[in-house]
Length: 153
Image (cartoon, rainbow, N blue to C red; front, top):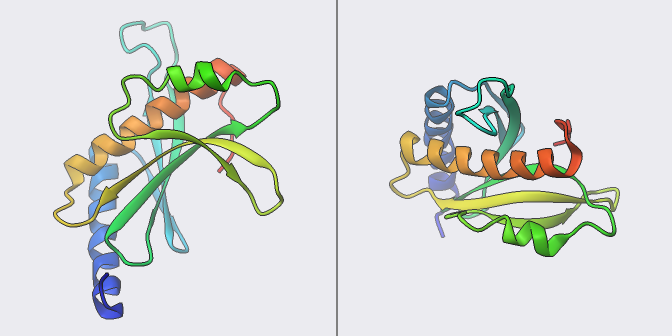
């Protein structure tokens, strides 16, 4: 665990790394409070020019100790009867992310794809790959479940 001063210093470095990673993805980034939001272009089938690219927002936020950066992308609201086993099978091929349910302040549950990455020796290229992985898996589920972009953070 880092001391308070070191944690604040890493936040400044993290901001630079996150903005550089977003630039590598050619994606806009916004900082809101202690979170960053990267709006990533996702191509469901990069070989099919008839399919329009989609966008997926990935939220990034640091842990209290400063040694982990968390990434999360909301798929949409969880509804009873969703085929969770099929969704878990859809995570085959995910190297660094997982599917989970999150409960919001209002008690509503949402499906999310999430990941965590160590901040030690973190670089923009490695972070941009992780952001893309989270965005791609979240967007695939969103397209399969809802057939459209669901504008939810």
